[in-house]
Image 1 (cartoon, one colour):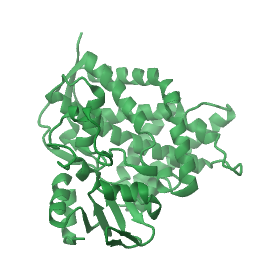
Image 2: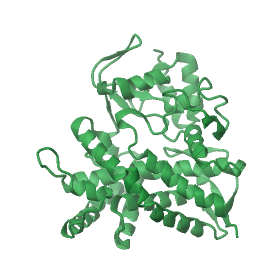
Image 3: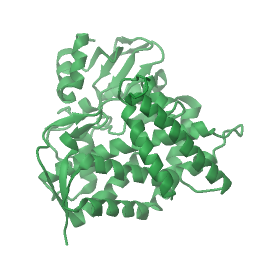
Amino acid sequence: MGWPCIGETLQMYTQDPNVFFTSKQKRYGDIFKTRILGYPCVMLASPEAARFVLVSQSHLFKPTYPKSKERLIGPSALFFHTGNYHARMRKLVQTSFSPEVTRKLIADIETLAISSLESWANGQVINTFHRMKEFAFEVGVLLIFGQLNKKYTDELKENYSILKKGYNCFPLKLPGTAYHKSLMARKRLNQILGEIVRERKENKSSASNLLGHLLHFRDEKGNILSEEQIADNIIGVLFAAQDTTASVLTWILKYLSVDPKLLDAVKVILESLRKASIISFTFREAAVDVEYEGYLIPKGWKVMPLFRSIHHNPEFFAEPGNFDPFRFENPPKANTYMPFGSGIHACPGNELAKLEMLVLLHHMLRKYRWELVGSANLIQYSPFPIPENGLRTRFMKEF
């Protein structure tokens, strides 16, 4: 494994990740080591290595996140765990977002999509990413709680918007800092969620949404989830569902602005997920000393499968810099397309996210047109990649 200069890792935050990772691959190969955020890391840019870590030998690696982010989301959120607890929570989330459940919510998701589009088409220039986040948040609330009192929805939106500002900032707890404000918002969210939980318990709600499944969960010993565990998993789902979905929808609008006649929405979504690669990589940590292809990965080292590098490898996707939905007329090679991760820690709501995008695109392409305002050639990373200025757009309704 090559060993790039420690200082070079700072480039990842100031330049296109495609350029950063590709330059390291050319110099050191598909497996190289570096340091990121002070941790020694092994970077994996081959499908076989990604499968080794995420699927075939996933028991040798555990998911890992910065402690500061874990405090804000909540330590009981399913993606911080492995073993029985993770398996139970993952199954519960998948059941809550199953096709049988979500089919019943399509009409409600359509209502949210139509309302959002109507509000955008007033001739004003909008920040597409911000508006997509609002839409994704409203859909998330619907899927978690079902119908929810507007007072609670507004309070959740206000405090979650403060909370998420602390996810990627320096974890300084001094009053007035973004991180301290996020911690305070997290406490308020606990209080709000506690009130909702107590109301649902008093009403003996048996809804099939996520909160209903969390409230009625029992393990093999009959133990129920605490209010803290319920809150952590709700915040975890909101974290996983909002910015990523909003980022993809923003990129879809940018790509379609070049050729709005690409009406195969499924292929457009698949190609947008590949080209934008919202999740550039995932963090794992070696639970023991691991040997792979003759290389030793020491216990405690971070291991990062590079989805973006795989998605932009011309060996797997011809002319990867081009937006070409028709490439998905043929299925990609195994383990080369992982926009939602892979293995037991892959996103459990990925089909739901696609459905949400399809519903919005269906109504948008049928009744609306849009134009980009100003430049959209640069990319901002915060941390997910989005077009500069959130993609300034003007929507118009076609009559």
